[in-house]
Amino acid sequence: MLVGVLAAVLAAAGAVTAVSMTHAHAVATRLPPASASSEQVLRVYLRAAKAHDCGVTEALTTKNGGRDTAWCGGRSPASWFDDHPDLLGYRNIGTVSRLSAKETGRSPEECIPVDVTETNMSGAEPGALPGWQFCFVHTPAGWRLTDEGYG
Image 1: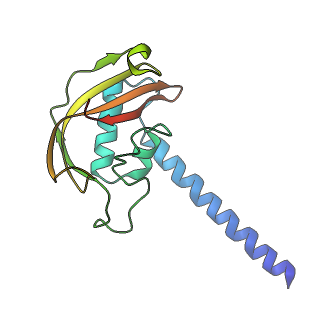
Image 2: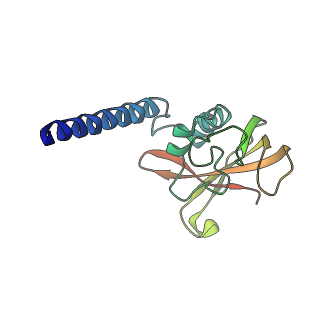
């Protein structure tokens, strides 16, 4: 009996591990290469956020970056009516601004303004947010979102 229970537990754990590895691999195939520019990474991020592809948005965000907005709420929502910001659209991707470590107080960043249309963002009325800034820091995996907002 104990051997049967143990075998069932091990089989279940193996199945969960296989699904997790398959999901991680699927996300990795949708990420831009490490050599991609910050603008290329931004475009992938925006498409993923609009499509509610939280695996990609999370993978393109530093551990502490962009979590205030976290277009996917950090994890897939239980319902699209949950209280998390949704990116409904974007346009007018602007020119990259390069900020030195002295200017940021940490690592050098590249920031790009984008006109976004959102809903459910804390502190903002639903609708257009012109000139929303997405700021990226370069990591070994490539450019990753580290901060966003105005200013």
